[in-house]
Length: 245
View (cartoon, one colour):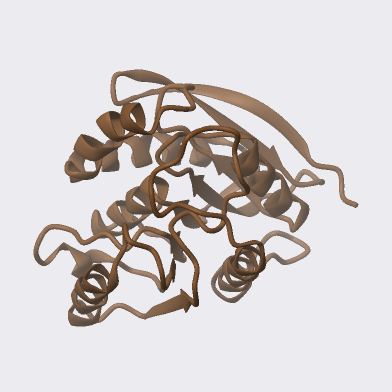
């Protein structure tokens, strides 16, 4: 196994002090980099381990924070934070840009080769970075088929991959249709994978706390979705020995 170096990074965004998790691959050369956005409750060890796994594959990875270092255990408290945030594209972009600035400032990062992957709220932030015209190599989202302001999807400059559970009541078929219609009309290179029988947040292992109705872990599809994300990065943001390409 390659040696991965990790550290906590604090930075301001949305009036809060965000606490992200940066994972660096072995070596000293510049590498392609990936932003990883967490779901509504916040950044936890699951997403930190995803950053570590990407670093083992050769990427610089930043699992960014959305809640000022907090993990919400109360679903209603989480919704009170996430709902207005999801309704405000500019706030989402500010959070995304702040994390992007941290990632770009890392000397190991190749600033011209960055992708954004997000889950739930973090996926919505990744999409808003794309709609803001950020030069990303790929955008991947799970459980985040969010639509944007009219016409702004045309500013997305990279392939978009999205995954969702067929039984997800929070991202129902009507939302899928609205999302795909938006990015199709914008001429974006897009893919949507619908995982049969999976609920919302199907990717996330169970947590010992209350969850919203319609949330549930699907271990088989969780592994498939992760392989799909890794495949997206391998296609759009390949790692080479010298970190270039």
